[in-house]
Image (cartoon, rainbow over all chains, first blue to last red; front, top):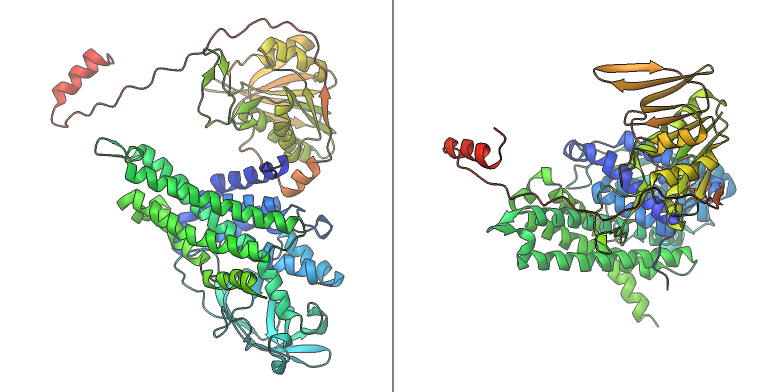
Length: 380
Length: 247
């Protein structure tokens, strides 16, 4: 066992922290209020290499390990998890999927600009009637010889407008059910693609979320990823890694709320002494710290397993379920510790509480994670 | 042209300062170490000059006097963009010994940049001493440094304005705030490249420490804030006059 981080991992954590504390903090409240996309921040973070930090340098990525990714995500999401989710989707869903399962041509054409952050990717799996139940895809991709014809609607798509490269999951052979699902790389400016309204979300308001409609969209045959029928397996494999990103995001939200609560409890006085001297508050701080430490260890374990090339699907499900659930608890306690100040926007913790809620829902709800975990225990 | 940046490995500016050994030693337990903020700005300016002058600056090196624990700080400087690092393998004791050690490495450089002070002991002495050891000019309180054609242009703040001067190379620039706007954050590519850049460990020379720490004292804790009723101006004036003695 070795709990030490390497010099590089520490440097990445510090770089992420510096950027978040120096830059993201400046306009995070305003972007949340106006639901404004962080264009300049994404450009800056691309130049620093965060958008493709996990990708092999030969495809223009940062070549960093998943442990570093957890550290970076935690630091960024302490301040701004909208920026965090943009990084997470691009890295651990889109880049990861193409790098691990794409052809050399696909990597050359699509992975490189994604890893450089010149283009942003989106992952289109959820549908109006297929969220947690991803097997029942209504979007179809009809084989027309040299191309596929894509029709259908995708919902809740992060980076739908800001992104320009889509990974789209669609049903090609309905009779084969989930074994007839395929996945395609689709360029957003292809004729026949239209976006629904910008979703007016409760939290993570600075990331753009839309539904995406496909009407007779031609997708070149060479843009299918993997063998015919590989789509469902692709989606499940990719989401295993995505869960580490969202778990780390939830961890960051919780530790951001925690740090603010500790500072507040040391400064704010009630009944003649600092809040920290009241056991009711001190014990809350202790509970928060224990939960965060456990969540951090879950995230790092899942990341470590992935870096070692060992199976990490169950570990990442545990990390995501636990980190998301405690993020909700910790941020709720943070608002409580702040009292009335916690309920106004200036103090950040109400925003963190709104953001925490989404981590229990997207990229596999907490309930779906429990299915993954329990099946792994009970099968056979 | 070659630039050398002298780097002090200092505790993070938010560190809670504690002492051990009967208040004679700074307690390093749990301390996060960083590049001295002024030195980091010097490095940033050196990198800006390298980019701007397009090939005129062939190398930017960094040097620090310190034990192995100083290496992460030097590695960060490499990740930010320095080409090469030197660690002089001994504990930094006082300004004289640090300047003497650095002088051994600094001989081949054209511009040597030092922060105006280090944020740990605030000695403000190494830069001047270094120029004496090297027998070259030094300019203090440099708030801008530029290279135009082959001329060095230096701006330094003086009371009510600024003075612009030039000097021959080699020289020591003792830089202050304003030399660069903000330190750079290392990129992934920079962090990756830092693995391959040389971090040379140099044996120290024999040098006498001219000063030694006797003990440290923490400042007295601030007195509690006294609240005076807004109606009671007389009491306020009394206290300001007799207790605070400010009027």
